[in-house]
Amino acid sequence: MSLEKQLNNEILNECNKLIARYYNYLENLNSEHVRSSKRLTNPPKKIIKRPEYWSTNKGCDPFHVKKNIKAIAKAIAKKISQKTYEPLKPSELEVPKEDGKTRKVIIYQIADAVVSKIFYKRLLAKNKHRFSSFSYAYRNDRNVHFAIQDISIDLNRNSRSFVAEFDFSDFFGNISHTYLFEQFDKNAFKISHEERFIIQSFLKNRDKGIPQGTSISLFLANLACWELDYKLEKEWLKFARYADDTLIWSTDYQKVCNAFNIITSFSQSAEIPINAKKSDGISLLIQKDYPSELAADSTKNSVNFLGYSISVDTISFRESSILKIKKQISYLLYRNLIQPLKNGNFRIYTNIEKNKDYNLMISLMQIRRYIYGDLSHQQLTNYIEGRSKRLRFKGVMSFYPLVNNKKQLEALDGWLVSTLYRCIKLREKLLIQQHYILPNTYAFPIDKKNLAVSLNKLKKYEIPSFKLILEALEVGINKEGLPKIVRPDTYSYKFGV
Image (cartoon, rainbow, N blue to C red; front, side, top):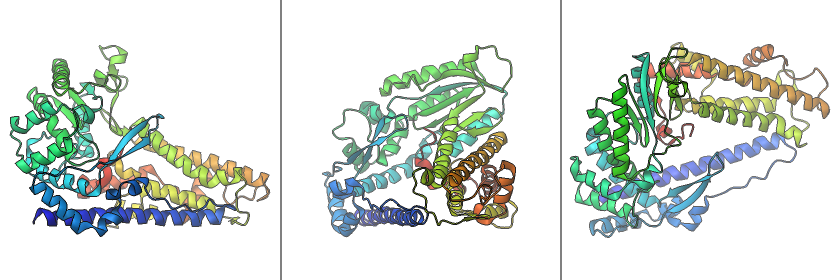
């Protein structure tokens, strides 16, 4: 297939994907407006928004690009063949972070993003065997969950291990170009003149670093770390690296100390500073309550890697991941059950009668969708018991399929019931105060134990369970393996960071 035809097909696919995403946004916006109209006397206006950068940068607008695909593909193919191609200026957005700061997001024009993607795939296809099996990021044969699984299995083999945790400062933004280009020829990577030209085009006008927001940088990030991975393997160290997040472990303290020297040497050669605040250095990982010859601040019972917390015997949610999940569920409950009553915006004729509260039903349906995706309690039960053969996992828990800490799962389920109970209790109080219902006439029993029992008897009011969805995920992994269970967008998900 000619490059022009390949560009045409890939640009069309990318435009269709972005357009479908936009139409999905419109559908969800309309559905939410209909729901708000049913439960609020003064629902917010339905305001349809388009990304601002679509207007300021036409090359990012999928509707505009789709109309001009043939001309765009032909022009880019010609420029690449004549070695005059250069990516057009991308859009830059400031996205707020949870800590109050912002991070810059770079969005390349659709056609340039496709060029990057095509050459990334080419480079990866013929070079992925050169990368370390302990490098898990930005590959189609590895992913974050393989890393978690491998770390857990290996740490479980020993009751105590020395671990070294390192993180780099602005990894993508600081990679030395001199060091990067040395890796092209030094370590037997197969890169054609055309591919080298495309890489140089994306790095043009930069003194250092590789651009984020483009696929080809994913290959370059792993290429930059090849020598680091090689030296760690040569030292017979076990490690997992996901981009710049690196965890190293061994039962031999001296070997882990050698790892520190290897990391420091790489940092200096590649000109990527080590992030001292996020790097915990060397610690002893042991089971809880086990004796240790090291000081307490040098001993750990678990290590964090991306969205997970891994101990000698269990895999758990990282604390930041739990907070993120709880925050979203709390928001859904407050928005549906409490907020309309607090601002006097509750529709008086919304049905609240025995075993029926429309707002509560919507809350639970939204929470189930958040946790389960489009699956129901019954579908999960049938799958676990073997009555159905295959499920597609889409909810937030599909990003965390390896959690096996049963106490933590039970605590999350308990937290959900307890939080729901408190919200309903407050909702009943507000309904009575505002004369929507009489005392002792709310739709469901208010004591915590009977609340869960009575709600779970009704199909639309079932309380979702973290333990149940992860039990189903475990069945799926055993049946079909991680690659078919894990969501494709796992690789871009922000795991508790």
